[in-house]
Length: 206
Image (cartoon, helix red, strand yellow):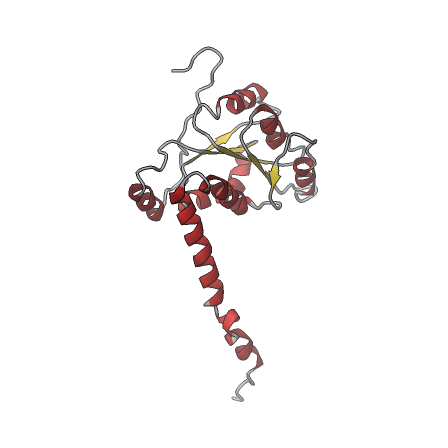
């Protein structure tokens, strides 16, 4: 039940698959929070295909999260309520995606002490450059961390890295993620020079 002036925010991300690996990671780490510690917010449902990539990274790393629509322009009261109640609900990092005027990350940052990571959403007119500039040009004293246009994967990873300082199990998963990433590159045919050999080898005559 919500008290006066409070808004009920469902903590689970409906329709999002939790991978078996993430489930196993959570079961191995009883100290992992069961409620979301990262809020992933979009100005509209159309932002979800981009923001879903952040959710996928967080889920893979076993970081509990929620995905919600909170519009800075159409639902400002809901935005203020979310920002003001986030810390009390256990949220520790907020990822916010927005396109065009992109007020969502900045307004969230203005209403909470929690770190906010902005994801510029690609737009039809300016391909997301407007989103990037609107997010990155925050006034002094109200910072918003910003990733590349459409770079939601890095937003999810950055959120996990912020949390790694507090949760050793998340730190271990981030390190494992980075190690796997390095091995994938080093073991690729391109890294071993095999791809170049195939390109330079003379073609057999039929």
